Length: 358
Image (cartoon, rainbow, N blue to C red):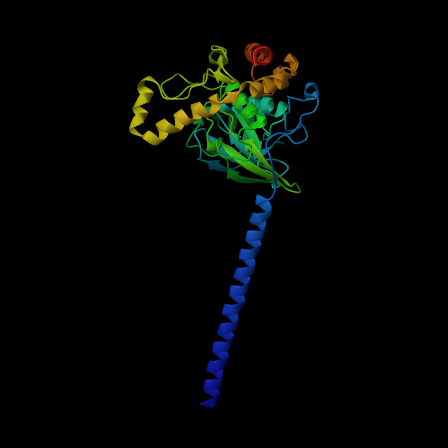
């Protein structure tokens, strides 16, 4: 009986020891997670870097490089069903994972990311391949029309590097840069590119290994370089005729610039009012991109004006556009940049008027 009681007590003590050990481990793990989260939150928030001499920026590779570009052969990993465009993941000859996007956004995003990066904003690497053979490619639930056997046409490759952690989403109205020149400049860039999908889901904070920066980045620029508009307003992507159709600036009201930018639903799209959250979200997006001070819009215009036509061409060549389309885009962009440059003259005239009539 004594031996039985002794064993029972030993069993209870062992159980208590295990519980205590697990509790301490859980506490330690929780503490470590909190410490990591605290470290991430303490990283320096960065939206824009001084690009230095913009005339020397390489817009063919943009934020990437020839050495970092995707290396065939590619092996199919899995289909990605999130978002509106067909996507899947592959692994290249170096073992690097890539997110591949098909459809009209592939070219638009490749070019737009280079233009955003050119003037100092954070941008992800992207590479466009007119043709890519994918070993083990399975039938896709979306985008099968871009596939011939194991060959895909018109593919944007975006790396998923282990050295970069994709953090939280950030919104245009809630971020550390609200009302700054740099944030207003980025808004102007979105309008310049006719990006009509400027929502929180397309913005992320990127954390780079061995860096104390939390880089606020627009990570999806695909719905651009066409006609801006809401549902029912004839919006488009990667369409140079639509892109060149309208002027950028509508008018200047006091110290603010009003752009030809409206993503509110029109015509049959007004039926979306039966779902108020969507309707009011589109209205908010329109208003957010309109509130840009004249001085900030003219500042980003001055940055863009430093780009040569050849640099602009490189961004579209990298995206696989043919020569005629590239030249049309360069002319349209140059006209839009000139509109921003003229805002500088309006700003100087306004200052002179205030000096004359204080």
